[in-house]
Amino acid sequence: MEFLFTKIIATLGPASSDPEIILNLIQQGVRIFRINFSHGTFEDYERLLNNIRRAENQSGNHIAVLGDLSGPKIRVGKVIKGGVHLQKGQVIKFVKRDVITGERNFEFVFSSTFPHFIGEVELGERILLDDGNVELKCTGRERKGLDAALICEVINGGLITSAKGINLPDSDLSVPSMTGKDFLCTKFAVEKGFDYLALSFVRSGDDVKILKAELVKLGARPQEQIDTKGDMGFTEVSEGLKNFIPIISKIEKPQAIDNLQSIINETDGIMVARGDLGVEMDIAEVAVLQKKIIHMCQEHGRPVIVATQMLESMIESPVPTRAEVSDVANAIFDGADAVMLSGETAVGKYPVKAVQMMKRVAAKTNFFIKEHDYHPGTSMKQTFMNRTVALANGVRTIVEDLHPKYLVVWTNLGGSAVNLSQQRTAIPIIAFNDDEKRLRQLSLLYSIKPVFMKEPKSGSQFINAMDKILIENKWASKGDPIVIVSPDPIHKQGITNRIVIHYLGESVEE
Ligand code: PGA
Ligand code: MN
Image (cartoon, rainbow, N blue to C red; front, side, top):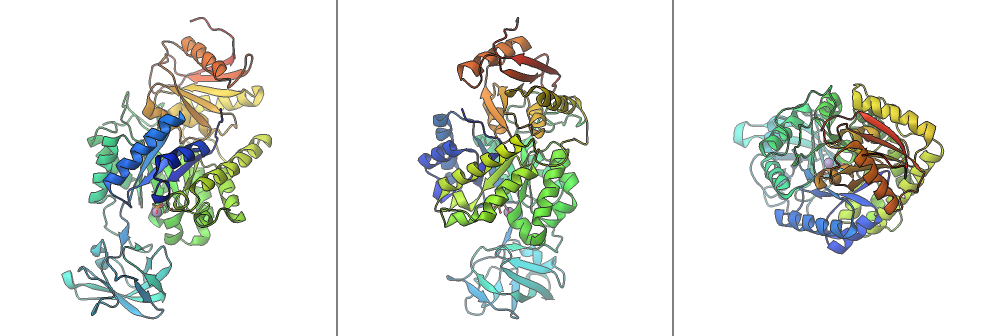
């Protein structure tokens, strides 16, 4: 059995929608699939989901499905076939009406999916199109009300086709954090049993609260939050909520950087969404922001994903650039739980090769970390202290003294697994539970291998059962030291209070 430390997320798309490819991607190391709600129909999503579940069964691994909500992404409206070329110095307009840009009388007049922004962009502010490839500057406004138009000067020109993205990094927009479609996608994700939901373009903790409230309404989050100073689950989970869906907040706006603390307080996990982040912020700062965000996630016990352009050149080429492999390794050194592939697996020519490459880089990097006792990230200390965190800190000391073969945990809500994983001890962690959904969710966390076990009646029964599983699977041999972390009593949710040092094969009285 192969144990993965850094987890690989693959975005599914036309290049990877067949069950055989999905199975192949799992076999090469993918543990989380992202279904991007920005493209496709509900029929497509459902087909992908079914294909993942089938491949998951065949592979014998627990696979998480992450639904990615588009959030308030603004796009240009319709443009004539072939697009229009914008030249430096040219003056163009955005209007509230629906027009087809490029048609007679509308040569350089654009509509958009959020016409409201016309009234909210101030003079001198930037309007970026097509991932920042085209830059405009607001130079004026015409008329008011329905006839209002925003006048812009082209600073950097280029080709614009239908539905290209609009980024407004300088403007404070009233656009709601979730669109009508996002609400529909959320309902769909809950009904179909998605394991995670990501929210794009989060600006503050309040944006996260809106998705949380919707999930509460749909029965996929607890009504009340447990005191965060207590022993928590994934973040704040009340007892026995089987449908719980953790939220991953995508950090890709300057406002999110300003409000990072409030977002981290509310969210269950974070994605460093470098694609839009590099458009909305100074691209030169992306590496620094990545380090800053990961560091803060680790201080607060939040899993963190690094995303976008990790092996971008593999969309076209079977071999990545040296800079790209270095980027994957550095994300691991920074302390990422998971690294994500986007276009590489969704629309690229070499989806399987991209995953293989990512896994090879991760394996080399994690081996180096282990050999040199080099822990990724800087501060593993959590700024808030509770029993689970203190216990995980204690486990680190035991690991250094005893070099156990595995850490083993019975985790009811996932909190103890998150905290052990955060220690980045270079020892594989086997997390046992009897809930499939929880096991799938655990597959996102660094160094965690989720394994099914029927809930044991007692702590000693748990030790004997896991002893048997480890020997039967040949994951370890008699006499190997194992460190076990569990709640006592074992079925009690939300507490982690027991460490046992066990030598495999030592029987324990039940
Ligand atoms: P996207 O998010 O791929 O949904 O745009 C990731 C990013 O912006 O980096
Ligand atoms: Mn994005």
